[in-house]
Length: 277
Length: 316
Image (cartoon, each protein chain N blue to C red):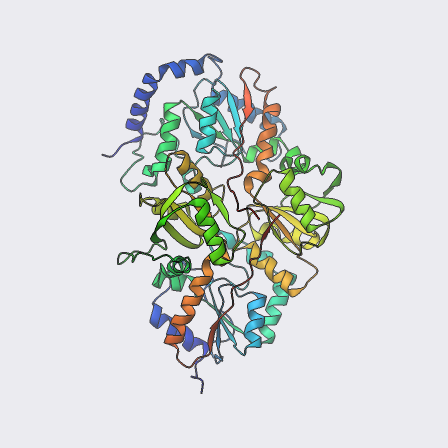
């Protein structure tokens, strides 16, 4: 018999286990559905895509726990003005209709999770790559996970990550022959530049592996300049989705322990959305 | 030891004395014309010809580094004053760099130097960050002046917008331009029907870019290509009116999920996206700038130095 739990009770339960979310978090919590709706099962999907929604419906789960926003409101500067611009948008309307037709609950917990467990998604990515992330100091809120790895080159590391993550659209900055022994792993969107400059404060770090970075005004140029300044460093972007997926798998295991009896599963790895020309 | 802007300037002054030969070499081409005089000529042209004139309330277009009173030995136009571009400017014996995009990153673009009296390196200040410090120190030691020419460039060179930032000529699509209303970039391309795969490969070849990312069915037939930049909000309209949008520096977490959903839903639009780097989208503005500036500043040599495509990718 399923544990009886409403959407509101689920969110409270998450908060009781994880604490409060960051005070500046935007567009988080219960995004769609009613507080009193009973949760029939949970699909963990970083991106609550149409594909994920269809899977939840097909597997009898009425709740999606996600990192991203179903209506594309990522937060911070990217979301400024977007809600208004999307009013009447055909994609948004069709997706909202699908969600409403199936009474889906969508709960976003990105900042809540990262505030409580700042290194878990980065550490999960590191583990997926076969590396052992170092334990952070108590109170360390940086998301970066640091790993010593067997000596390799940037080119070898990129090929290895491509195979291991089944990702083809990797983008690299740096000398392909550069030697690497210590990696800073940062899941998702490595932003702002301060995140990268903080990683470089560890003078042994010679590579940053992340999902994606802003280019000209921020992080990619920063790494280019660091290289020109003489820092032995490189950047590997494995793709936003690919970098976050191992975290969703670990989150699902944690959730199953926390909510025994509740049907919970993680979305299969999403297909890489991009291909190179 | 904390260091103020003034003491940093004094240190830099000592370095410049040591490097006096280099400074003198820089001063030979034009003893009189200063960086701020060059900027004034540009802004005068903006004032007389430009649309949407903003000066003197400059937002982005300020001196980012160096003393504006520095005599100019030569001008480098670039898309972005990366550290590498600055080094190439020094090698080319040109001490005034005009950049379309930021010199530093994020909110740290306006650090300037020399003229500031307030301490600029308190403990923990981002300005003590080693990469910033190295870049600034290099400018000091080599007497470089950097000015950003972003907002005003598009006002005084409205042809740039019509030409898709110079992209049209690079793509060889001059005959395919159609005007559009109410969009960030006021043109689209009506091209002979081609598959998405072939259009994307044409873009990659024309722009000499290795990391052109594509979303959509490779066999999608494309007749109309829209333009947009960076954020989902800026490509919504062309996505609804074109078969594919050629986009600069997208964020994976913003535009990509929208495209994924649109395609999953099987709606008529959106159908596809071609994502290129910011450099490959807009660098052509700076490339064509020396020819535009030469009549205005005939006294000194002017050249374009590319910032280049930052990424490399694995072979397919």
